Length: 269
Image (tube, rainbow, N blue to C red; front, top):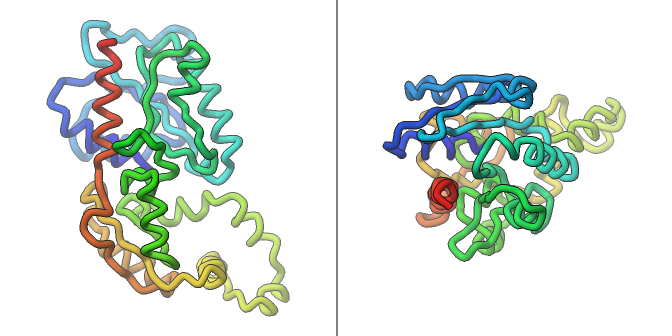
């Protein structure tokens, strides 16, 4: 969900980069976006990486990217163990690690702190200007931290959507493992009694109504989706929520800029 933030920084950085993507079923979105911007990259299998077949030039700026299954955001304990296992296994193949994800249900999951405590390579993840962790993909794009709490007070009963979430709406919703399992367990009789209309959209509308959601809150970071307004309109029709645009100053790329800058600075440490 945050590959737009990485691609944005890659494009903005004038230094020549040698990008290697670990080949798996999760990297299609990133590859398409890099190809659209004519950014060259190579791929390597994870087993080949572990077998020592990754041979970067130490005199150049090498970047290696591993994409994870989006569905892990709905299973915090599995996300945490998966990220930590990969981080341990990939220690010999990088000088520093940047984690392009939020804590996603793992409250105060400070991955750079965990790396330091375990004697691993230096690492960074999305934080606000005061060093507070960004707790999910929405938090990343408003640079919060505490700012997220402020937004929830100001915009109660809103479904927060930024450009990448709009373009990946179906993938994002289908990856919500607990809700998908709950929906599949419903019989037609249960749906009728509960007033749930057919299909996944019907189930989503019912969930939103339970939380008294009335609006979609548009958080425009300005990156990653040329059809943001069109995608939002379609989501509005499917959810039956009205669209409201967040006031200027809520959507920001500050934490995105800080993460990339921090990652590059660690290479000189």
